[in-house]
Image 1 (cartoon, helix red, strand yellow):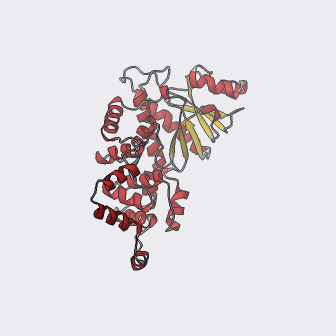
Image 2 (cartoon, helix red, strand yellow):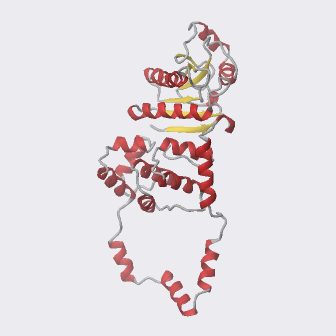
Image 3 (cartoon, rainbow, N blue to C red):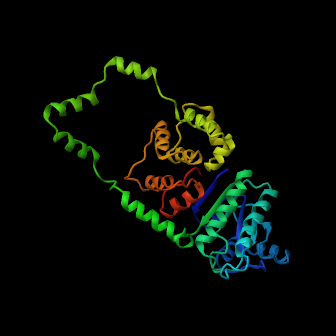
Length: 331
């Protein structure tokens, strides 16, 4: 099952478990910790008192009291000290231990905040990378809906270098979406000699019956057929493909069983990314689903940016899409 990045209040997430960015005492604090205790009510603190605290890098589980979930997993992240005191390993352990606890409780869904990125001072872009890497590795061998919950834009940050590069790429390639292409086409036609202009217009309007019959007899392969062919050509298993695409197994089954299935544009691109297709192959796959890439669409330009650089990490692509307020791939 896929990873979602969402902007929400974690105390309102209707999942099996939410993760609390706790302190070692587990007795409440500020930020996410305080918000979760306030929403859960005093019984959560009572249960936490019985746990005897928690080591940094570890996690413990309680009931959820008044929260709309089943469990709260209290993970104690490291305080940032320049990166020289095993902060990365401790933060990785927080995510890994929380996921294993959720798995032990047979949770089908879990929501994380960006642990240690608040008052503990862990650089947000590095904290994000740790979270995404650990969650990605877990999902490659496990089935679970995982949410990374961002309360506001200030709590989320990708690498400044990547953000600046994408921003520059968008600036170099973006065409105003409000350009009226029909008017532009008409201006081009009106600049042609009259006879040629008539031929161009007529060629778009008229199609001999025999040409239509010929086309109907030679319909190209569908999106589903191309997808399955490409999976075989790449020597991938179905599971490897849909997991790399950040796609739910049930959705993949629908696509596989229905040759005429029409996926959404983000789903189509997600599979192209999973298969590591070139830009030309990606555009071909999109056409099978009835879509195209456009320089008047920032989402499309960001996809093009990553493909042109040979970066097919769907989690990094989704980080960038989220930073630019675009739809995410797969999930």
